[in-house]
Length: 406
Length: 161
Image 1 (cartoon, each protein chain N blue to C red):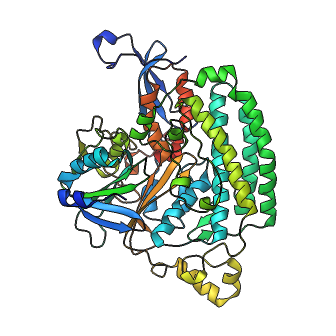
Image 2: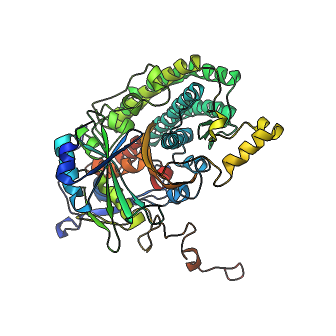
Image 3: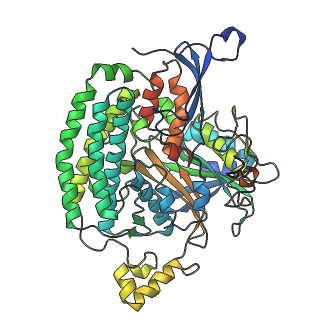
């Protein structure tokens, strides 16, 4: 049953001495990462909540000013660690927009497939753990098995399971082969079965519905005013998806739906994520069958990409090229300009504001992290709910503290 | 893309375009009025981002800080980047939390990292750095390895512990 907000406003007033304060986090199993909430409670009802963040702040944006465009990808990786490749793709999307590089068709498709795998990866964990926090352990394990398969696919392509650092300016580290394509195919074939099972476990589960329906309601106006994007905004009825609105990579050629809901509560956010997984699988299925042949990186003559390793070790031209790209002042020309470019990451609009100077390092590399924006929403939508709903709302907003604090 | 001509005349904007990003530069005292007009009359109902750039070492820059507002019109998908410049010794701007509540934490982060005060902000505290931190780490005169913070911790050897 939906709860209405308690009329109390200022917890410091003397007639409200019965209110008590609870410290939630920074080490708490339901926060999954390191963040802290100071909750003011009336019995078990949340009157006010003040988030305290910054426990994982490690100066990523400062590092971005001291590492070059290819080196910084290893840092970007560690922002949203549930979908590392989506961050890399977003970062290099912004860099390539600044440098005006048009990717090869094969690279566009490859990155699209990887981005959608990451969306699955992120949503699988989010739906799994938000159910886990509410006491449903089985769905979490079912979904984790699927994540394991995605790890395998990513490992096969990049050599790393988690922090892949796979993309490069103008392409990717190395191309994929037919075995990889076959691996992706077999993954998509069996994915829907697990998805159906979890649907049957959770979607009409009485306890799960009681815990999520009408909890943490975010209206459409609030979602827009509070800068929400991604599944959080779409669950509140904001029809916005950068893959459709500002098509990048290969999304223009692919057929998929933008999943929206009117509910705006935790249950709606769960449903949007569940349905988005099916759309992602459809995108992967289309893209993997249509992945074009040809080079995966842009032309080496553009002095942007590193030549392939065999060329570096076996020819003098390759070796010279390798040094030219790597050495300071010998690299590619970067315009003296500023750019904002964003992609639809699993969590929402992940944008980068890059200020270019005459070197291969950014003068300023601002990240627009969706987790940070969404966590600012939390105090607004938790008011009037019970203490046990805090974990439900936290889970449904998909707060990743590494991205939150950077 | 909306017709900026009336706004250019009214607010004295400088307009530019780079790779599809439409940008305007406005004087710091008119930035609130411009953002209010853009929100109320031109449908820019979402504030995507507020950020800042410290132009201390930037070639050809005349001002110290550039504060950037990225706006989005949710119904048409149109974007506009509004930029304004402010300078030492007391960099401050009016808050836009009265227009978009989403600006709350974004402005707090800009304050935390660059020391730009947003007058009228209801809760302008440090957000990522600890409250007792005195410097503004994303300013260009702040070194990558920090300034003395690590030396303030007493070194405890095994025999002393």
